[in-house]
Length: 388
Image 1 (cartoon, rainbow, N blue to C red):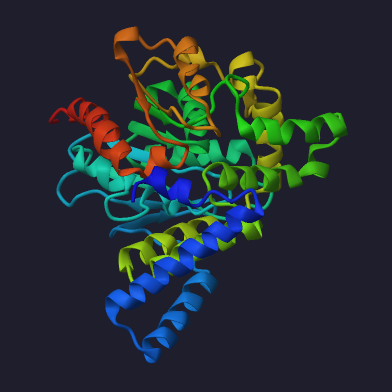
Image 2 (cartoon, one colour; image 1 turned 120 degrees about the horizontal axis):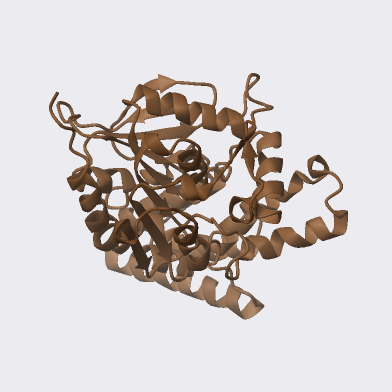
């Protein structure tokens, strides 16, 4: 099953007829499986115990492949995916999205792992940040704290890295590169809004009315907008939260394929990631909404971090832009916009248009094999360190 098929399969039915069709498909698929297996009453009882276990499970998403935690900090852990003895190249640091979900989406499953795809491309000196929910020392963390963490992490990896950011991780990587251009060897931005007002984004459609109603009087009074953003992401990629109809359809799909271990595991993988939520610091969330989503200051000007202006034309390193043609969260126009503002020579800008939605861009097998793998091979080829 492709990522696009998974997204389509999970779309909520809009009518009672849709619910009925889902029920018929689920039960007919299950009964067909019973006949094929020549099941008895005990098998049926075992099946329903398994069905109940799966639909009621709530587990923290896990990282699909072995890695070690190299450094621990209050805001994030640094996970090490480097191959032993293969560090004679510029380090590559991956920034997962910060949408209130687990960072392990970048190592989602076998055959659907960005981390393993990057390593296969030849980027063997490979690391990833694992964002943490707010704790006592980070409940009031700001954008300055996140940039400071990145600066400290890059220093620990040799002072210069290939920076790979997906979604929220992409604009954070862009801001960091604009502030510290000499420390970024190559910048890779995928599915990340740079011009937040370009194209037609469902997220902006959901959030903007809230600001019109409040006249932007107090951002702390509308932290609920962040929850709306999270719900919006989940709905747009086809896994609705808090929608009984959508949950029912997905459960019926599970019932129809209950005798397929691979389908069950895919169901659990999606369920783990989308139903496990992690809060972000309120002040950081407010800053994102005010400065980026509403004011669009990353490209309109006036964005400051720690008293320093964020100037995109300070970026001169090779640039890779990856966007999904069916991405309703971050339309391609929001990603391509970065090319207009940086000072990177045109010959060193690479654009990849992927036939995928927001989630499929990251975990779709075709997206990883046909787009991520070749473009990151070119990054690996120019990442070898000169012998001292």
